[in-house]
Length: 265
Image 1 (cartoon, rainbow, N blue to C red):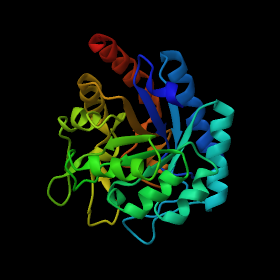
Image 2: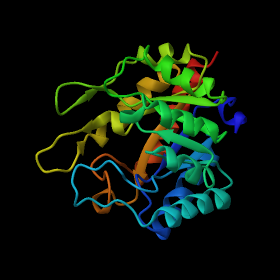
Image 3: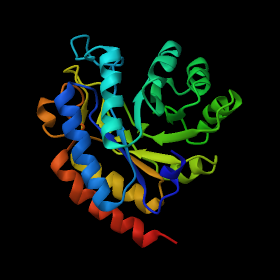
């Protein structure tokens, strides 16, 4: 895992929002792996095994915890890449750690001490998303909680900051600020463009601006990127309004690799 963060290129965490079924997770994982191999981008496959935080009670939540986790693990084994998923309770940490390499802490739970400590005790990498309500500087305390629980393997992800009731903004000063805590920093190019609190009960988004967010983050020197992608976003069972159509991934990454090469010392 450590070599993931020591490559000339940024690394990419990418996949569907949630495990919808076997066929689609393999389709996405294989596509992204091929592109990343061609461009020499280290790749981590991601998918939520269960969506615990939904706008509406009618929203899709998953296919069953252990079934979904086993699929995530199987994709990683076939592709030969690390895998990650998010957890929401202390009890989920030990369960998910049996299947994945990186445990993701959702932004709205980034201050939940017991959850951070439970994730830390698994010995897995812990990727903490910066709360939309948090300053970059305040994230040092989330890092401390994991390290004080005996785990030095911490990542931080910026996913934007609340701007009014229905929008987010990205302050790129936060990326070097969080890198100053001695951990790799990732830019979530998907959820930073969410438009929450819609009257429809379904979160909106601006996936057309994913390239803008990604290019700026790479230019600033971010360590990794997080992008949710899907071959048919309109048919996706979660966050379809936010995901990058998968056919747009290769041309975007080709541009990003050039930016990275231009700023590399």
